[in-house]
Image 1 (cartoon, one colour):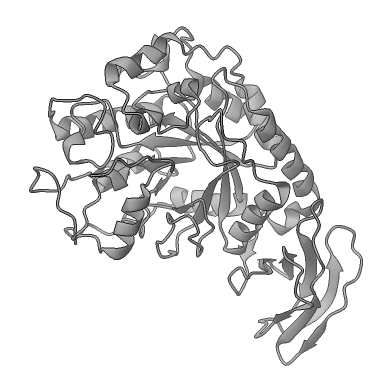
Image 2 (cartoon, helix red, strand yellow; image 1 turned 120 degrees about the vertical axis):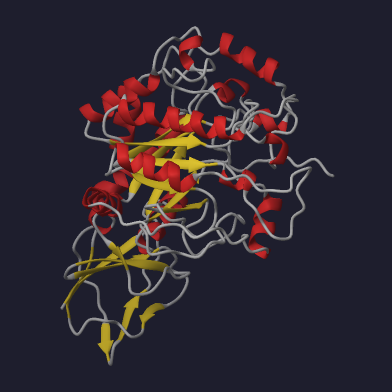
Length: 454
């Protein structure tokens, strides 16, 4: 079998193709999930927040080759473990991270507490492979949680349910981590209990948590057409059991799982990787859009964890486009940074944050607390709405005009540019609205027309 080099946050391109073509094996029926009042309030907050910061950082940052380096380079566990002797991020500053996110207009931070390499970035009792056993000896999650509370920032926690180190993870039936040197086949149920123990720590020792962001389910996802190695049964992830455990500890905590398929019972929001919902340019977001709150996670360059050779940073127009089209679907944008090994944010990321923050000061009202338009995002742009207002976001101005058919409002009392209030001419006849396609520029990549409607 050919060696596959993984560059995605989660899913191999081969797996994406496979999942798209093959249905998931039917699972036993589960009890219906009825979210609590606290959960529904959290969902409403999440839908209105629109913008968050994703943080991929850990031992892998030292190697400067992305977060999948242990798998991609087939690094053995004993060798990878030596990185703990070098991990000493003396320039980590939780206050600076949160302040940078706030300046960009972000409302929440999703922090990678444990990636697929199994390294825990908090003071956990259940694994020696954690940040307290490095020269740094500081619980960065505790510092970040405290700073988020000080600066009124919601904290979400990424947690990998895949582990390339542990023997009790069913690595022999998994799709990844085959080259890390494991030979012992441990007890899968022990691994499930290990995860529940760590999640209990995260949800009891660090204050209110906005949500848990799971990743790695796809490593053991059953598909009908695949023959698995020396295993005649598929693993039982116990996800509903784990979800109920989380909701029992913190009823308002939202749960999402980056499994690239329709949401499972017990999940509270649905994420899409590197594409806004309804698009699939990267081959990782082929799932059907659900009724749950939506989130697009995307990188500023091409990698999630720090990569010393990746200088393909997105422009202001590209980031604005992701944010606007996510909102046009009624969803959020979770924009990723991969801090340097010493804990600093890359200067290029700070530059993007400053640009987006300046843009948000002018156009934020067309993003926050909005819903998606009556039509999905179009090649020219998209719509966001509030009671009494429709925001027309023009991201491409190559066409002479924008025509909106079946416009669902009876009357338009006013049309202006959001940035300066100048009037915009329009035609509205028989439910057909015609607007000028004002061309965006590099400095002003989203021309927003505000329609006051009845």
